[in-house]
Amino acid sequence: LVSQSRDWQTASELTAMALRLDKQEMINTRSATQNPIHIKRLSVETDVADWVAIGSKAFGYTIDANVIAPLLDREDTQILLAYDDDAQPVATGLLFKTDGVVGIHQVGVPAEFQGKGYATQMMHYLIQSAEEWEVDYVVLQASKAGKPVYQKLGFVDQFLITYLQKCKS
Image 1 (spheres, rainbow, N blue to C red):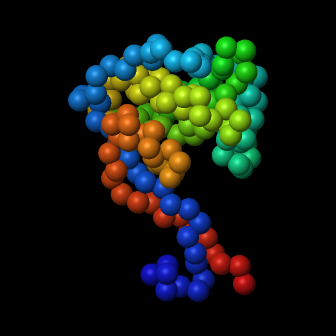
Image 2: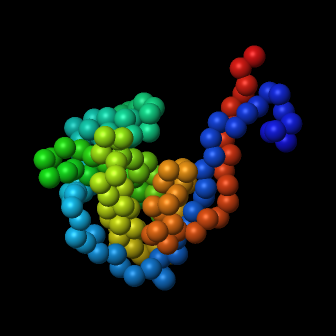
């Protein structure tokens, strides 16, 4: 397989995870925290620039605003941006609904804002939003760094996803 190939190497590995919502209690997003955030569902294109800037910084690659902006008008999509008490954008999130499943994507917190509970608060909000859509499952692809957060919220491993890249000659 890949380990035997001279042409391909592992670029990254993610874990597919799922949370069945009918067994999940409604999550209180207003739980006491030292660093509360305020989450806004984006509705205008001017907000997309902040979302793209924070997401790009969190993930270490450039997110194209031209890909994100058309999602604003979709009823099956929510683009969310979290702000701290100083109105500084600190975290991103994105929901896609397909039938009875909501996919959670692009949950990102730049390094300078990590360790303050922002990702957990964003996840609580995303799960609650999925419950309001009355779906059965929430799914995501977890990085090694994000996996412990998702496990604490009740997500269960499904399978490993391995992304490959062609080896440089």
